[in-house]
Length: 158
Ligand code: FES
Image (cartoon, rainbow, N blue to C red; front, side, top):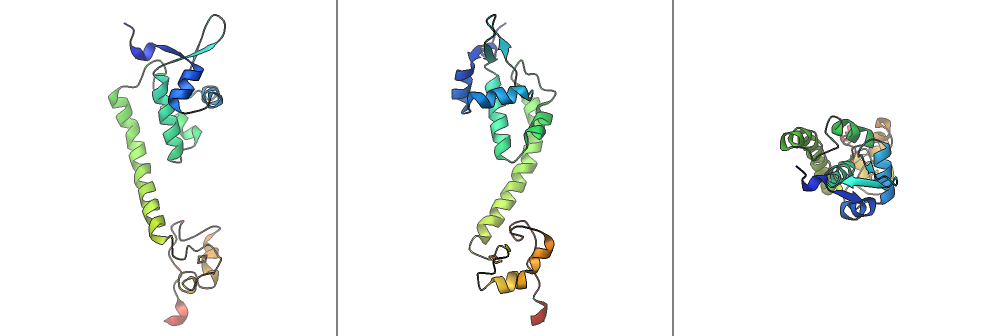
């Protein structure tokens, strides 16, 4: 029995509905993330169910997953039909962990936007407190306080 997810769509239709370029679809396909079928003339057609995989790929990238990680997550799911609820729910456990991490990062970012971020600029008065003499540079490159390091202790004032 044919269902709507068996329906074959042109690459342009998938690109438009999925919100990605046709070139991105070809790239995803080259990585094995999605699959097309070929017409007798050699043109690509995609099952409608591909749209769900495309949505997954796009949002997984927004969450910071690399394409190799996404491929591993999708590995084992059929490319011939939309995944069932229990298949999505096992994938969602991976996302829940990442979403929780991103929420924590964003809350931390929001709360520190107008404060010293530990970047080494020493341009604010509070940098003397949070990053005295750029001691956070010892922890590595970048805005150390945004990256989760704790402010330097002001040993001289104790
Ligand atoms: S804001 Fe750059 S070191 Fe404080």
